[in-house]
Image (cartoon, rainbow, N blue to C red; front, top):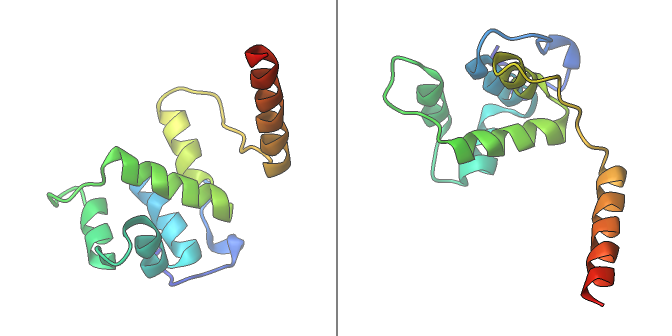
Length: 118
């Protein structure tokens, strides 16, 4: 599953067996080095991510790092990790927000906050 920087969605899995596979799918889409750079800057390498995804290693992702990876996955259109987490926790399937809808929601909240303040 570690093909570097593949942009071909046909090669990405539709279902995964573990959260680690979900992180690998995101790394497959944008490249492991790019994913590591976006999560940790230059402080961590692809080897660190590999160690974090290996259950036999001591290195583990912390929740904030996993959330950052989920956000990157959403940004690039790879949702299998979020779907897997929701499935395992017995939540309904998530739907990513449309950026236009999100902006309109923020504008409504801002207008309501101004009205409340008056």
